[in-house]
Length: 455
Ligand SMILES: Cc1ncc(COP(=O)(O)O)c(C=O)c1O
Image (cartoon, rainbow, N blue to C red; front, side, top):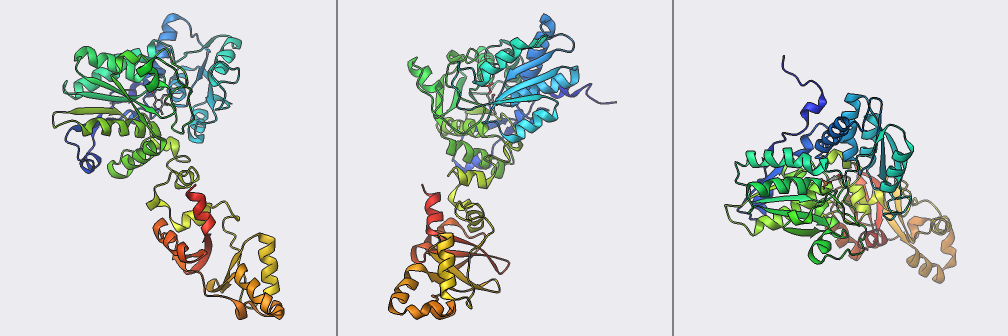
C-alpha cells in the first residue's frame, strides 16, 4: 500500500513552477520560478516551522503529553502548529490581530485551536499587543509551550534544512536570485543562508510592504515609525530576532496596490492562486528579473493560498471598498450593489402617475436630488429637483400635476457589466445612470457614487 503515515508527512518537498505569461508580458528574459509553498498540507510556508518547533520542544522535554501550544501568529504558523498538534494530541491557543482574515480564523478553529483576537493598532510592548498577550497566556498556562516564532532558532533552521536544499536541487544549482518576504524572517534567513553557502554569488532579495521598517532599517540602521498597510503576515514595526538582515542583499518596498494586483494576476494568468504576501514577493521578483538576461534564474516563494483571502483582496467588493480595484473590474453592477448611499437593492423611484407633490416629498424624505421615473420596471423619464423647482416657481399648480407632465428624459441605462470608463463618460453629461439586469432596472449610480470611488 502507498500512503503517508499522517498528514505531517506531506510537509515540504514543494515543487517549482515556471511563470510564463506574466514574464512574457513584462518582457523578462530570465526564468522565473514559483516555489509552491501553498501546496503544503496547511497551504502555507509555515507548515515547515510548525513541525520543526514542535519536534524541538518534544526533544527538549518542553512539550509534554497533553500540553498546550500558545503562539502569536498572523494565522499561517498557527495552522502549521495546529496540524501537528491535531496529530500528536496537543491543545492550541493562538493569538491573532483583527487584521487576520476570517478564513484563517475559521480554519484554525476547524483544526481544533482556541483563538484570541487582539487590536491591530496595539503597539509592540503594550499589554494588548498580540505577542505580549500570547506571552502572558503562556506564562499563566501550566504545561504550555510558547514557540515564539520571531526568535526560535528552529524557524530559520527548518528552512536551512529543507527549503534551501530543495530549491538548490530543483534548480540544479542554477538559481541566481532568491526572493522572499520578511515576516518573522525565518524563510528568507534560513533559505538564504543555505543558498549563499552553496554559492555566495546568489542574491537574496527581501520584499517588504511600504510602511514596514525593514528596508530603512537595513539601509540606515535606523528604525523608522511604521505606518499601516493591508498585506497580511509580512513586514514589522520593530526588528525581530529571526530576520537576519545580513543574509539579505537588497530589500525592495512594494505598495498594497501592487501586491494585490500581482497576486490577483498570478491567479488569472498563471493559475497560481495565492495570498497577498506572494503578490508583494512576485512584484519584487519581477523588478529584479527585468534587469537580468537569459542566464538569470529567479525563485520566489508562494507563501500561501488565495483561499485564505476570499473575503479580502480576492473579493472585488473588498478591493472597491479599499479603493484598490483595477478600473476595468469596477462594473456598474458592483458599484450599484456596494455603494454607500442608499441601501443596496432598494432603488428609490416614482411612477409617471404619481403627483409631483408626492415626488418632491419622496426627494425630501430620502435626501436625493434626482429620481428615475419607472413604469413596469422600465425607465420612462427622470425628475431633477432643480428643474422641478424652476417649473414650480413659474407655476405652483404643477404640484397637483402628474409626474409624467413635468418629467425630463430618462437617465441613460447601462448593463450590469458596463465598465467604469463607460459609466464616467455617461455621468459627464447626465447626473445619474440606471443599471439594467435582465431588462429590469435594478439600480442607480449618481455622480457622488463615482466620486466616492476616486477619493
Ligand atoms: C502570509 C504570509 N506570508 C509570508 C510570511 C513570511 O514568512 P516568514 O515569517 O518566514 O518571514 C508569513 C509569516 O507569518 C505569512 O503569514
